[in-house]
Image 1 (cartoon, helix red, strand yellow):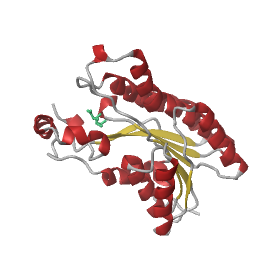
Image 2: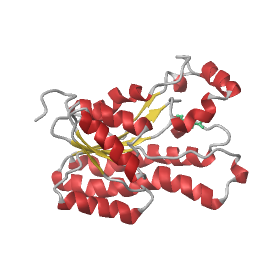
Image 3: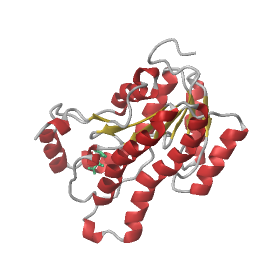
Image 4: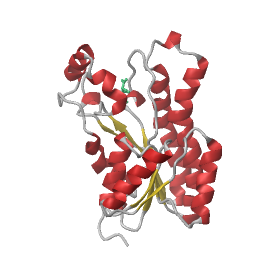
Length: 255
Ligand code: GCO
């Protein structure tokens, strides 16, 4: 039973792509707030290693390794949850990839891979989670967007299209599922210190440009998403729906 607005005790959270990066940070924050975690990743060994670390820290965690673009694997995962009585109270659609090059150089298959991983997977996993949340008249869905949900920059066209889709998929989820006690929202991380951005961090020209665009004059840390994620996953946001909250050091506020 929740004892405070931000307490996730008694809740089970599935965070896709949570063996590392932003998903790992969010999952760790949820665990510290009392949630049981279902850790997901494409690599079973890395996923299990993460689960062992959660358990060593005294948290409840289990592994569920699947590629979010593999619909059969997603359906099998939810069949397992049903069979084992695991109710996913909180879903974070975090898994995603980046692919940078001029739009005219992308093959259609490369386009599809980014769209499938970053957008379609959020629909498929969101649909399966929502079917069960509707039956329980309760649930939290948090999609991970990006500054690219609002703005574009050269060389990340497919990612930008996908993340713009995340912003509006979140609204679509909200307008259909809010009546069933589900809150669907999104977090738009700014430029965060993650493996995906390593190439950018080590590019002095990009880094100088970025620092000129961010009022906070620094990259964000993955743990700086945790407060917003707990807010959206908890009883503190029961009347918040369809929103994208940007955690970006003020970048979207600046001309
Ligand atoms: C890029 C980056 C960005 C960040 C983030 C910004 O190449 O511009 O990968 O997309 O990862 O999404 O909000």
